[in-house]
Image (tube, rainbow, N blue to C red; front, side, top):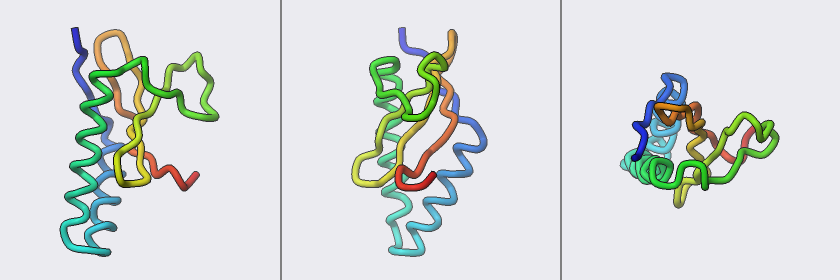
Length: 95
């Protein structure tokens, strides 16, 4: 059974900010980023624990990531007993 996805407010804010920035670069590009992140979240639900761990995070914490296609972003999440919690929409070329 697939678990529901819960996106933290901070992750939503990161995505909104990134989307605005991309729209400033080219109109409609922010929407394309959101679509890429939505598709990555679908893969999170489907793949869950088979996703890559986040470099530099203690493996025992179970923090994993799925990269977005075309954009340098990843969905960072933790699989909890009843829900998959998205904790960040992370730009992969920044700290």
